[in-house]
Image (cartoon, rainbow, N blue to C red; front, side, top):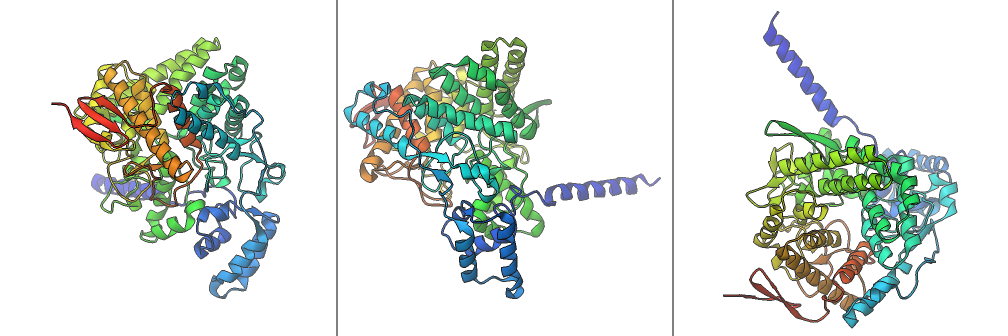
Length: 580
């Protein structure tokens, strides 16, 4: 036998199969021929009759999907070459769809009251008054999904859940997964226990029905999730309002969501002759994102046809991370979305979150008197801590770094998420704490007036410089504060004071809270990315309330001086004086 020819033939078959796996058509984001795929979505979004693509896919139907599809098919059949006149598209949309927001009923949170106890603990009078204003905002961000969505789900992109929700605000009129962790923490401080529990029950309902929690409350999110905070939401709720019956009734659903991440988002990586299991974001769904259809479609025109499915999957995977979009995912020559390789990255923060989830599930099962299950999660926790240290820790920098399995290298750039193992206590050697603080100092990220930048690269993407995001500030601050290191605690308070000041100055100027802020300037909202900065804002309010509660007697609205590592920071003007 000609072994050379046989091996070459086998290699050729492998290459063909490998190519087919990566370029074959992937399923659409959901099964809807209106909201997720099909002629209506394509023609309406490319006609750009709305300034934001999300507007269209948030509209409801005035008739059954079949009749709406039939009506549009009639328009296509009478259009020359399948090119539909823009005015006909506008007329079709106006007669076939309802405005976004009509799927909600008016709702006032019945458990809201004026004077939750935490307000009285805030020493600074101006900050206390501001916190009271933020507490008031929960009323304006509350939504209840109408019965019509439950009765006629095919006429809406909104996913029905049984309990009212607190939404982020702005264009985000539905609930979102990871945002809700900080929202719920804020609600618990506001003593809105029923609303907080209702939101957790909604997420449990989604796990029960879909096997996981979608990115947000729309059908076009049904093929991707967001960072897995459900178990940590339960942790927050149990710490404030312990209810063992509620936990016992739902522990299997917490495990079910964890199993989704361990079976659908797991990956093995080899390091020094050993195999470790960690997790990544990996959405196998084709086509443009419906809520950003025209942008995705037009960007993909720059690619060869067989490269488009993978590109669309990478964009959705970046959206699953919550970081849509960032240079963090760029590996290539264009330094743009075309270089997105999210699925190849093992992210520090995702694995830190799952580390904390495993620790909490082990505790929950112990509390419920289920030692066999508790032991399984204790073992999983030990294995993850070992894997995070082996694969993601970088001794030369004194921090953890994302690892790209395709490039077989770490991403040495600064991101606040590099420090999230501190927040998750995902380490065993306490020496890493001061190393991580030294890394934070040497990175230059502490030098900015208004908080930690999301990266040090200015790409125009919203999850890059100069933007600073509330959840990242909170995870870093809480991670530093919970250690035994005075150096770390000092850094935590410095960052908290900066962040509170920046948010407060912007609130005084704009009478609004924003989803993100600029680390430069005198308290202003962030920018960049696919849409204008949004007001509201759920997780921003939650983070501020937590920081005001954590540093209730220390944090101030006026200029103060803070010494850290031999440097005197004067806030809010950030005059830096080195001690000699």
